[in-house]
Length: 504
Image (cartoon, rainbow, N blue to C red; front, side, top):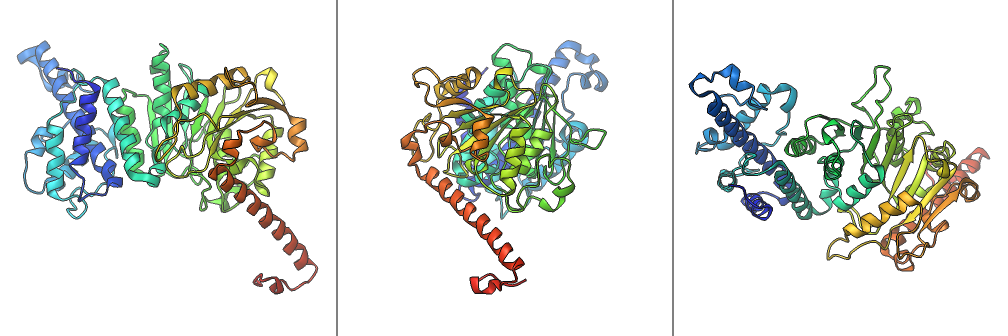
């Protein structure tokens, strides 16, 4: 008997709520997703066994049955065999996960993460038993819950966990309307490769697959790659892709800027058709000391205390010649900050790699209320866009919410259309989209502030987020000017201590 999406979501949320009280809501994902994945693997294994027995009956042996199973479950690791134990359940679950991972080294190694299942201070036995009882009410084999339904249920939990986690959610969850906007702009195609160097819970990769499915194209030939620094989040991403029936993927754990995991045989970073990401904004400790000799610094070394352009240059370096395109979420500061970032920005523009700048509404993201933007790069820009940059102001395209704003499907579709056509969406009067020639950008000292080139909504200009961006810009300009001044004063032999600058 199949169940509806509403029923599935309700039961999944009941399972999560079994942890409420003793477990911090920000940690729900650490425990709920591995249990959900194990229950799915176990229920699916049981259905596969029944299918094999129906076909072969008493002639069924281990060798024949192995052909029916996607994953191997050693004896004693099925859900029903383990969860009936009433003492030291957490420790038993930890052992079970280790056995399953060991039995499936190529596909499931490390997939369950590193939660402390046996630590009753983190997850008391009573909470764990409540989680088991809640999952016992759900059958998760494909005959009851389709992959589409289960994938949607997983996304439902991700969204709810993000709502519960507040600002911490920015580490693993990007609002899906932003994901859909990026995917809609980049348009991945069957047979291509897609790569997310800061993949979080895998939402960008899943969205690319889903877009191909929904458009009737063969999603099975798309190859997905991702790197994520957080172990728990990387595990969640892998489970997410499995539950969406995606098999041709490779998620690696590690620090993308210090140690990129995907390399070509030459030692350079591997290149992909589509590169898409929402990396952490303005990372302070990102490994700048290694970048003066890094080949990814194609236009210069970013500031030691701000890694935004390290991610940008890594992604641009990772796009294939010819077909390659990049879509990245960035804070507005990357459009106009001075110093090393100004030089990098100029280099990317002069190489004719930057195709579009899309301004987003404020308060969309969990991690910050300030508005962000999308930077779109393309190795081979269309003829009509060569030596131009397309500016799109999407700052008014949102529905106001209590805690966060959101973009409707209509908002997303309108901005995708604006990018594709280079003109204003219907009803916008042409004021919020403009294709700007390099000469004008050069005259503005390669400042990409959207308001310099198109009229931005007065309402949004007065927004707190925009005010914070303007403040950060002015502060950065002042700091840059002071640094130059002090350097010249010191060279002239003037004692800087009179200005409050400590001597080295």
